[in-house]
Length: 273
Image (cartoon, rainbow, N blue to C red; front, side):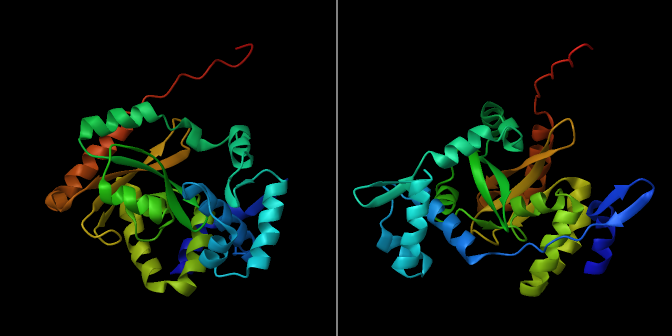
C-alpha cells in the first residue's frame, strides 16, 4: 500500500533540468539524540513556571548530568536559555527567531477571528500545527479544563490518531506525508493502515474526527485553515464533551463552514501594477 501512495510523490522529489526529469536523492528524516535532547531542554524550560534545575532536566531526559550540562552551557552561551537561581528558563533566542520567521504560515492565523469562530460555534477551538513527528496546539479560544491540562502537560500529540494530526497529515505535501508514513509504518503499522483508510474521506470532506481515543471523554473535530493561495496554515480543532458525541458530524460540518468564512486581508497591489 505504501508503494501506491509513494507514486504521487515522484514529481515532488525530482529536479527539472531542461526537458529532463532527474530524481534528486534525499536523506531520510530521522531523530538525532543530541538534537532531541536540545529540543527537550528548551521545551521543559519553556513549559515549567520558574524554570528547571539541571538535576530535573537530567531526570526527565534520562541522561547523565554531565551530558545535559554540556548542552545547557551551549544554550546559555547562545541566548536560548537564561539561568536564574540555578534554574533554567527560556532565553530570548527562540523569540528572536520567531520574529525573523517572516514566512511562517502561522503568522496568518488571526486570534480575533478564532475567538469569533468559537463564540459562533459555542465550543472551544484550538489551533494545531505540526512539530516534527507530532503536533502541538499554539493558540486557543475558549477553555476546556481537561484539554487545557493535556495541552500543558503533554503538549506533543500524535499525528496519526488525533483529529488535528490527521488533518495536518492529510493536507501536507504528498512527499512529506509519505515520508512520515513510511517511517511510521515500521513502528505503528496498524495506525498507518487505519489512517490510509481514512485519508480519501478526510481530503474529500476536509474533516477529521477523534471520538475519545486519545483523551477519554473528549470528542473532537478538525478542519484545515487554508489561505487564499492554497497554503495550509494550521488545523482548527473543536472540542466537545461526551454529551455531544452523537452530534460530532454535525459539529464538524459547522466548524468547516465557520472556518471557511475566515476573512483574509487584501493583499497590496504589486509595485507598478
